[in-house]
Image 1 (cartoon, one colour):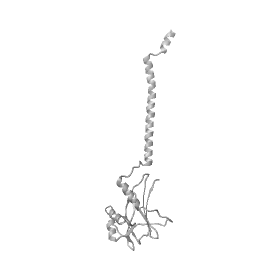
Image 2 (cartoon, rainbow, N blue to C red):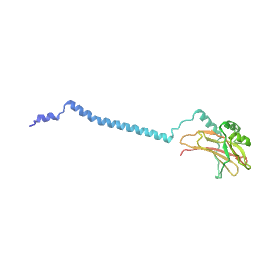
Image 3 (cartoon, rainbow, N blue to C red):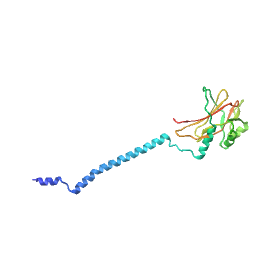
Length: 200
């Protein structure tokens, strides 16, 4: 028969056994702490990545790009007004990179100048000019400084010309002067030069 004393002794574990039980009880708590900490870190990383994707992690322009962007703003005009009666211009071409500096000099004080056929050919390179009464004109234009999005040219019934540049971006887009040669029937009285960034 088991005595009451022996039962009481069995109910009290040795000190070493008690320490092992206490340590084992703390292990799940420590593991849970590590799991929660890692989950929080992962959530924080995802949040940072999400913010970067929304903002595009925009970077500032380097000095040369910033300077060219500022110079391009001089060429940008107020947008046109009135009804939309524009017709897309198809007979035009951008001035080639080696000749941009010369074209910028010619357009320093005016937005549009009349040029000869040989001059146009030299500025834009190989191009088949249209027939009829159309003659070449050198025009100001401002485009995407990264060279991704193309320019668009349009003309109104009164002969005024609109040269539109732009881009799709969440971040600021640098502008760049990009003169063009367009074949027109008469000298435009007004040229609109615009640049728009769609941030949707």
